[in-house]
Amino acid sequence: MELRILRNFLTVVEEGGVTAAADVLRLSQPALSRQIKELEEELGSSLFVRGNRARELELTDAGRLMYRRAQEIVDLSDRAKAEILAGRVIVGDVRIAAAQSAVMRVVARAAVLMRERHPRVTVCLHDDSGANIVERLDSGLADFGVLVQPVDMGRYGSLPLPGGDPMGLLMRHDHPFASRTAVTAKDLEEVPLIMPKGVLGRGDLSGWLGRYAKRINVVGTMNLMYNASCFVREGFACAVGPQDMVDTSPDSGLCFRPFEPAVSTRLAIAWKNGHPLSPAAEAFLEALQDALKPRRMS
Image (cartoon, rainbow, N blue to C red; front, side):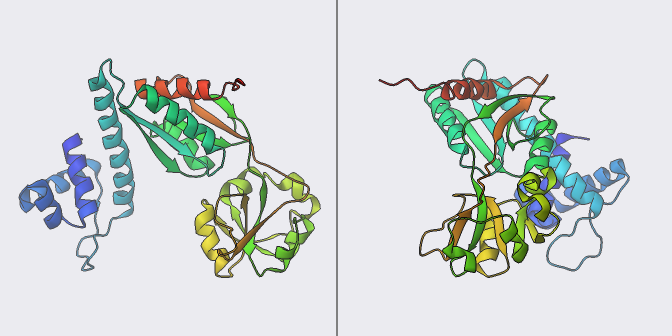
């Protein structure tokens, strides 16, 4: 399986067809079609739905899987080449997959420190939830993962990140609970909820919810609070999540009320054990360790 063919396959998908991709790649259409056919023969499976008259190209199930894997292979190849060519000058990307959190400010401070030391290093952020972040770490698509705890960290090196995010309820400004200062577990019985997938999977709030855990009405799940806030604003449901992730100013139409008793997330940043970090990732880790040291008072 040639890397060149995988790149051409990705271009066919991204351009929506062989004709448009051939123009971008400056190949003849028959030559590109032949490459795709040979790739399908090598894989023993069709990658595209034949005879589709829709304007957008349609992938088969095998094609969707191959598109994802081809992206990973090409991405890792490009990174390896960049790291080897960098030599003594530290050049390259630091790829961080992260859950949404205000604690990312600590990670950002480390990035600032790293850029001061190594101006040619860039940071690529990927927002996601726990299971997907772990998958990116394990596959090598992320150098670091910012994970909401608890997570089994046995396979990873890690550093705890200071602070945490108060959890609570995001609602419309005219919701009956908007007049309160806090929301209790019993209150959630009455409310259709959008819940973060990670919170449900880890059971983060099971202890806080207590006997009300089986009585809550989950009508949706989400990864990002901003997207959920659009549903909240339109009146679909309220959203459980961390504070300060979306605009709740007076003109936003939204408000946030913390849980009572208070509950907050804990986060750590992880990297894969036994997997050598690139020079750029090593530089970031060094900057992060410095950023986490207690600041001295002048």
